[in-house]
Amino acid sequence: MQGNFKYYNPTKLYFGEDAMTHLVGELKNYGPVVMLSYGGGSIKRNGVYDAVVAALREAGKTVVEDAGVMPNPTYEKVMEGCARVRDNKVDLILAVGGGSTIDYAKAVSASAYCEEDAWEKYWVGQGWPTCRTVAVGAVLTMVGTGSEMNGGSVITNRKAGFKLGKVFGPELYPKFTILNPRFTMTVPQYQMVAGFFDIMSHLMEQYFAGTADCTTDYIIEGLMRSLVHSSRIAAKNPQDYEARANIMWTATWALNTLLKCGKGGDWEVHQIGHAIGLVTDAAHGMTLASVSLPYYRHMMRDGLHQFRRFAINVWGVRPEGKADEQVATEGLACLEQWMKEIGVVMHSRELGVSEENLEAVTDAVKILPVGYRTMTRDEVVDILRQSM
Ligand code: NZQ
Ligand code: ZN
Image 1 (cartoon, protein in one colour):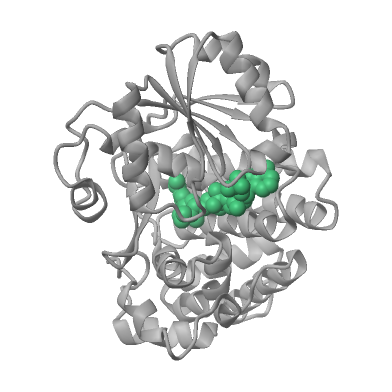
Image 2: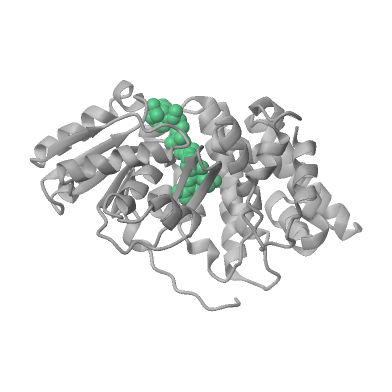
């Protein structure tokens, strides 16, 4: 292990088919007014809404409805939520949904009482809240982002021309999250596998950085192997509880700050993915899937030892008698094969990227000085072209 770090994660998790039975008890820790934030209505169709409202009633809460959080939540919507929090003196924001709804809840929490321009302060300036914030709790219905146990809040601001992530500190992590794999069973196959790839991407973004012998890499390899195994089962039979439960747990650990301990991380695939998301509004996991292979093939020689290790330890590639580059290449071929097997989008043109909007996508890519190599704008253009 190298570097100095602090590890602290205060989110309390309730996992399993009985997880919801703990919601009433948790709600009792907060004041009387709860804002119930959710998306476009999936929770009304699958019964999760009714279960949550029953718990809120039993806990004697006044419920403020806050519907319509869209995938890739916008800053305009965040501002709407902020007004609702202030007008109703909300004590707890209960986010029921996927990463979009939970990210939105954190954004509202930090921005409702912010006296400055919250977009400039948090997402552009990467500043920290100095105002009062509102407690956030979550009931997760879609697996992938890890938002259930982290401070991430990715917001799209079309006026500013960016989709940007802010990672808030532990004070903005959900105070508690209900993780019932059954709640995710109604997620459409396309969204489900997008989530699976998002998890793999979080693991790869943290794995492909650094050269030290680091315990974190061994943890990541274990999580990758579990994900590959369970996702193969779930892609064929989405109702397989064991597989879906394993994947839910893997997703939570893939991005709850554990895996950055002793590691620098890369995160450029996410920057390119966010730019594609900004321009096309495509599902987050699919934006990552469409650019990952061109990106990693481009980077492979810069982090050859780690790509070789990935091939051997995650995919079982046999290294005997092979040059390092060949081993690493075979590992990425295994990744490609798995992606095809679970059925993710392999080309960004399927999401709407074209020569016409290539410039706009490239302009929106934030280039980070981390990972094995810092991209140039021309390299980003090359990767995007190859991804089409
Ligand atoms: O809006 P509803 O009707 O609920 O439908 C949603 C939405 O259309 C649907 N869905 C969710 N649960 C369902 C369901 N449909 C049926 N049954 C269920 N049980 O799925 C669709 C996608 O939901 P969304 O929340 O947008 O997906 P996801 O969880 O992938 O979140 C994506 C957002 O999270 C950000 C992404 O950039 C994107 O904006 N991320 C957040 C991160 C974080 N907080 O750390 C990190 C990630 O890398 C990511 O950037
Ligand atoms: Zn992601």
